[in-house]
Image 1 (spheres, rainbow, N blue to C red):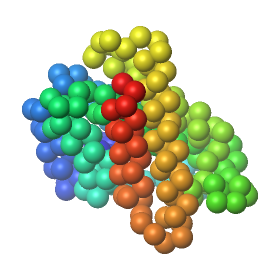
Image 2 (image 1 turned 180 degrees about the horizontal axis):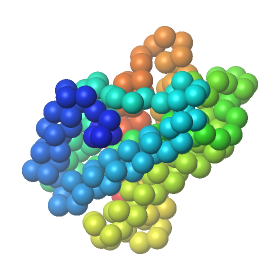
Image 3 (image 1 turned 90 degrees about the horizontal axis):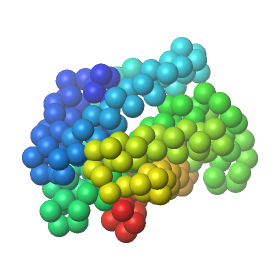
Length: 207
């Protein structure tokens, strides 16, 4: 899903639909965790906005495509919750939060390198990572882990750490697929969806 405060009407409507689905089908903590993601995403997007605007990387408003790419997998995991448990939902949410932090905060520090040839890359380019962006990605996923610790239960310190690592893995998958995106195959929506899918699969396996 996308940042509710930064959505146009179509994006806001689709976000509301996903929220209803998550509330109705998911674990009791699913909607609160989604709200944590939304709040954290808004803060990450707003943080350093003047610097991001100067380098042309500040996105003021997003539409339904962004909501669909980020929200379809968590929503599907919520629907499947009675069968697969809450792990896939948490994993997918951790992944998209990690990716959001990497893209919104990672551009504010460090020198990115392309995963294709490990040469220096322009900030904000798909398929490139930096140490600072990777750290921010992990921190973003940890926010979901801490939320799960308090809202879901059954997750100790190791569980929170696993959620952080799962989110980081999803974000790294996004970056890897971004290499192909830069070659003209797929777009940001497909990489976002793959990020969430990887998080969901790892969540199913390890949470």
